[in-house]
Image (cartoon, rainbow over all chains, first blue to last red; front, side):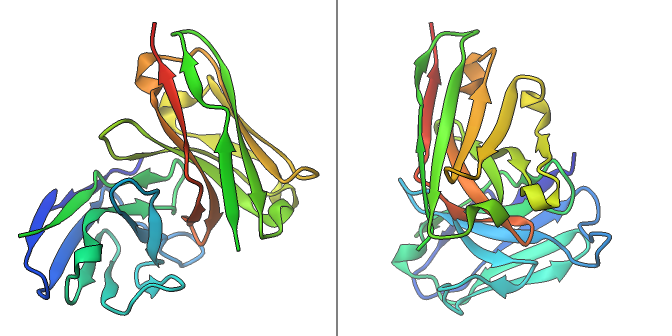
Length: 112
Length: 119
């Protein structure tokens, strides 16, 4: 199984400042079809997860452009350009390149 | 609007069984790949398994911890996804989410149904 490792596990951020979360996979996430199925999800307190970014850098419908994804191969990053109060929650990376699909441990974003 | 509504959770003893359902609406269910994801209390997300559309073979795949105990099925005539969970263990206690699968990820999520395994 592909292991997804996120850092940091907790990220205190000041409102209006940027935040960055890293995700590393134990093997390349490049699929034989040429796509890289790495996504980012946000889970606000008490809510189900919500898709933010798919295939490394594509924002899902309705996601603000403050959120961006980058990376390639085994190393990926989610960036929030200016953190807002509503961004508080846990962020997960997920790989859908090889079954079984797997998630990172989650990174808790909190306001300082 | 896509809606996924899970049901069937509850309290069950170790070794017991449950059948979870997910009623889908707002999209063409028969064309969709579907999955189940679970989340133990206070823990992270864990992928449980998927089922492809019948057009793509209708096959299933499962995470290692549930292989042989859990079975995913679908009834396209009723727009419903199922998860049969057998031989339950205390570590299977979790909220179980139904999701659509698209572009290698879970793009739509239900609210979840809680399964508690305890004696």
